[in-house]
Length: 65
Image 1 (cartoon, rainbow, N blue to C red):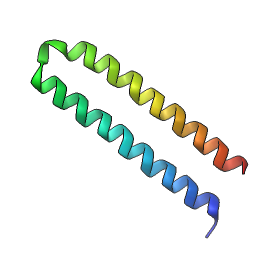
Image 2 (image 1 turned 180 degrees about the vertical axis):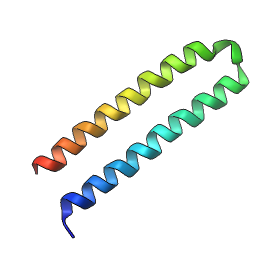
Image 3 (image 1 turned 30 degrees about the vertical axis):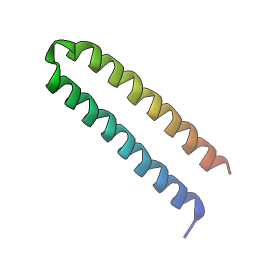
């Protein structure tokens, strides 16, 4: 098995878990305080974008090496 394939698989699993945790936490917070849903959603999207950016960087590094 190719090490790049293993690395890419681990990156994708980590991305899925990270974004899933962000979504779960945001939905929990919105359920507790519905009036803050807009601010929570904006923060969630920014955090998910940052996780995706870090994941894309990791994928590029894995493909280069």
